[in-house]
Structures are given as C-alpha cells and as structure tokens.
Length: 239
Ligand code: PEP
Image (tube, rainbow, N blue to C red; front, side, top):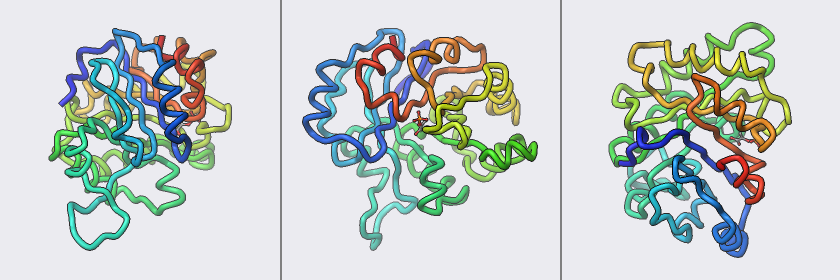
C-alpha cells in the first residue's frame, strides 16, 4: 500500500468520462511531477493499464468499483481486479455517482471495505448540496455520510477523505478559504479516528486558487476534475 505520509500534498485528477489513447499519451509526455507530492490520475477504467506509473510520485486510480466481490454482476469491476492490474487508489462515493447512479452510503461502505481488503486506498468523497448548505445542514450531512459510509476497517493509512461540496463541482464556485478549513477541521474531529486522516478539497480547483487552498492548515491536497483535463493547467496545480 502507498505510504501517504511520505508526501507533503496529494493531488487527484478525476478525468470522468473523458480522454482516449492519444490524449493519454500526450498527457503523460507533458506531465511534470513534483517530487514532494503524490499525484494520482483517475482515467476511465479501460485506460488504467495504459498509464505508466512506475514512479514513486505518480499513481493511477479508478473512478468507481463494484460493491460486490465477484459473481453475476454484468458490467462491474471488482476491487481484486483493480489490484490484479496494479491500481493503488479508487474514488468512491463521488457526488456524480450518488446523483446519477443511485450510490448510497451503504454501497459506499461496501466498496470501501472491499478496496481496503485489497490494499487499495479509497478516496472517499463527501459533500453537501447547495440546498443542504443553505439550510445549515452541512455538518449533519457530512456526519451521516462519514458514519454510515466509512467502515470500521478504514484508518488514516489506508483511506483518504475528499470534501467536495456538490455545489462547487464544475461550477466555478468555491467555499471561502475559511469555510474550507473549518469543514476539514470538522471532518477531522468527527471522531478521534479521523484526526490523522488526509482530507482533500475538491470543487472548482484551478491553478489560480490551488496554492491558497493547499496551503490551508487542515487541507492535505486537492481533487481536481475539469482543470485536470488540461495537462499544462494540471502541471501548475501540482507544481
Ligand atoms: C470532481 O469531479 O471531483 C471535481 C472536483 O470537479 P471540478 O474540479 O471540475 O469541480
């Protein structure tokens, strides 16, 4: 399993449903890694094997995984199949999966447990919608997502949490720096066991705001969607 404590910051690129072989080749040639950081690229699963990650600062991650281990589940990929293909990380519970694919805290919980069993580090996405934020429900929503979605086997060495306010994803909107730091602090203090967890921020991170966000005391890195698709922009973010 990757030793997360070796890195000063962690950056995750979520390509979502974008990219192809030539995009990947070009991206890889232009990618400029920072030797202090852990960079994780999450392409669509079919491209996971094409990413050359024999570098201690670059890893690949899947964008989702089955909640089942094996069997008659057409279209699914299991945690053991990811392991078999040297995948070290996997996003779990991304808001797009919760919204469009009926992901629940319970399925998130099973997925994380399966990944941890295979020594794959889940990047566990949590976050509130705008309506929930406006109704002062952020703390309650995050607490439920964390309590019901994260199995007991998760700890700060084998799992990462990403705080991604749903209203900030792909919108160009972000919480204030103070809000981000406060929410991360809240997450780390929900329970004694979360204090040392790496907590990443995600939602409209770009080169103009990544430095100030990453420098916040309670932020351990960023999860980047749209801006990770432009390699020059992503290079600036991870530099
Ligand atoms: C994401 O998809 O996890 C994300 C943070 O997207 P964006 O950076 O485009 O807001």
